[in-house]
Image (cartoon, rainbow, N blue to C red):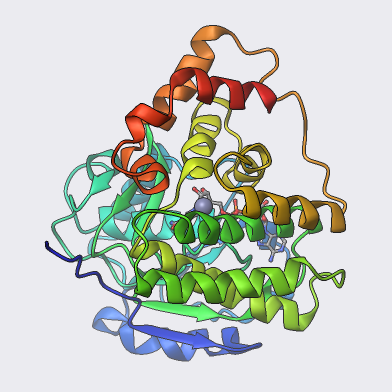
Length: 360
Ligand code: NAD
Ligand code: ZN
């Protein structure tokens, strides 16, 4: 038996207003006293002076505002890397990602490809990265994915949606300022929050579970229940709690895995471009057979917050389209093994998966 020896984020700051310390935190990491910091920021903040005015640009520092209408793609990473390489003769000082899971994953991926040869798709998989990434900082502005703490940067590539899972993926520095999440729209708050809840259920019900994962998963699940089984929306305390639930949820899956909902959600995302949080909710709503308690509580949360999931997403799909989604889902073998055990191939069938997709 060989145990996984995985890295953790070495530096993290938590607190409302801690984002004010960004400039002083990154300053000592400026290379040669002048190499630029590149900011990748969700374009939802483009005209948001409350946030942007707190960033002090100096030397050749630059902000790229990024649309998150679609989840990050390998082509998007490669384009940014090539743009940065042609603009600057030597490596910049670091990449600062400010946004949700999409931006955090983009920042992680760009920082890796900047110091490694080839294209981002070459690194989709497990432990394919050879060189240390450029210094990279993550500042989440919505809570739930755990991308701020995880060892993966999930990208949609030409052939597949798969993470760059490596020891060099985690951020060097994370700034957890729950106040940055105050304006997240309610539906999105729910969808991304449920990503965290589903991480916990899938980790805690999985066969890979150990006490390490359990200790983080249980704490995160308790926090999710405190937040989402309560009628009070997005209060300051709920923002603080959800940010820590996301962190703990991410830590929980670091040493275990996600399960059925994530496998099927990847299929929806790959073929139909449905985003991760809402995709997970669409699938999880129909997984009573696999997670009876978790799904019952999910339905209670959904109804308490008046969330109406879209319907009929898969109703007009053709047989070959279901096949594409089923292939993506079944390709995620570790997820199935975690969810259903070593014998998973005898338990889950293409027809069973298709029947679930048809309900969505
Ligand atoms: P997201 O980053 O796509 O953002 C969702 C929406 O919320 C966007 O429209 C964004 O503009 C908006 N938003 C973000 N912060 C806001 C704020 N403070 N105020 C107002 N609007 C705000 O969504 P997400 O759910 O955080 O991330 C999904 C992505 O994360 C997917 O690409 C998924 O693959 C990835 N993911 C990664 C991991 C990991 O461990 N790396 C884990 C789970 C999911
Ligand atoms: Zn997830």
